[in-house]
Amino acid sequence: MKKVLAIVALVAAMFVAGQAQAQISINAGYAPEKFSTSWGNSTTTENYQGFFVGLTDNFTLSKGIGVAPGIQFRMNTRSQSSTVLGITSTTKETQMLIDVPVLFNYGIGINRDLSVTPFVGPMFSFAVSGKTKNSVGSSSTTTNWYGDNSSWNPFNINLVFGAALEFNKAKLFAGYRLGLVDQEKNSDNITTKTQGFFVGLGLNL
Image (cartoon, rainbow, N blue to C red; front, side, top):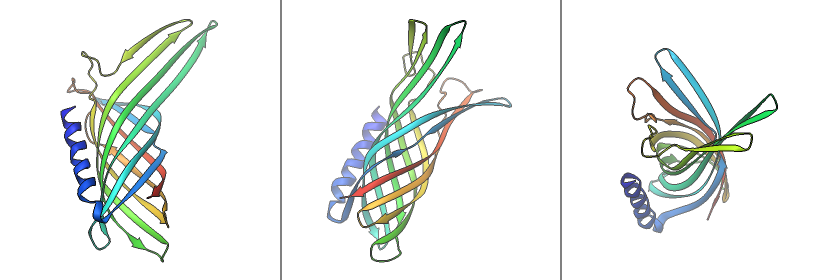
């Protein structure tokens, strides 16, 4: 938590420092995530649906080159069910995260109103909650991913890259993120990492 607070404080300072030549953007989009767990020669994957909403503040470093710190809320969800002998079993999983991207970008003007902006940089992620609810018939149990005895790591660093197409104040952007930190913190023999694409819409204020 201290790491996340320090990163958020840094981003807030960058927002304030860059206001004279900055452009704030409101963003929202779709960001599914895949968890890949490997041990020995085996790998399993779990696919989650994901959505995000947030703010970025792009300010100029030099002509055409900018850096865009931001903060966003992201949610991953996964649900599956099966019925055996008339009894339905359901598993619902929900993870909520705070992301802090710091993306370097380069604007390429096509004409007066249209531009393409490739971007790349780190995104720091902290899971504020994660739960699995298992239901069998009318009975249910809930497991906290990040409880006192949990082996899950709530912190992650993602490498993010992609591009945005901007027209006047609107933008369409897409890209990919690769999780660099092992999400299984208690085992040297098991590794869990994340990855996923994202696509979204933004409005420059």
